[in-house]
Length: 147
Image (cartoon, rainbow, N blue to C red; front, side):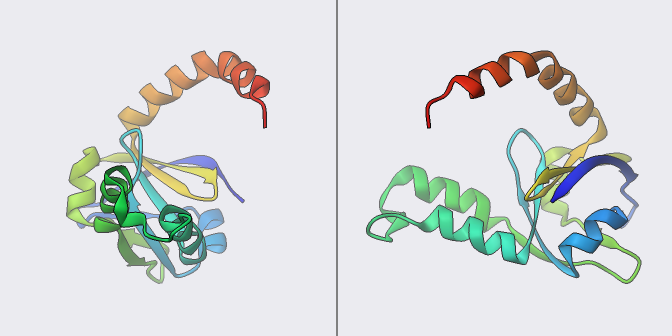
């Protein structure tokens, strides 16, 4: 399970070190894609296969038939990138993904169970404070949902 929060620096060549804990769980090849809430998602190749299957799974297996699915699949798959983890644990973040969320200087790498999220440190700090302020209400809401 991928958990924890780490602050690292993105270098002038768009490389950032993955925490050792994440490297051990993720392997040498990962998928980086646009995320939600102004972050990037990093998946293992195995987890990416699961996500891909769930995004394309419909009763007729024709996920391109609805506009919402087409749009979201373009968002997730069209800008996804296979990335190798180098010998010292760094990954190269493609320019178009770096620019999408304004990465520079310090970045937050956050383990969220099945993925790692990359945030600009500033965006992560703001988001974290908002989420912390809503945690009790969110827990109550999620706890009262029927399954």
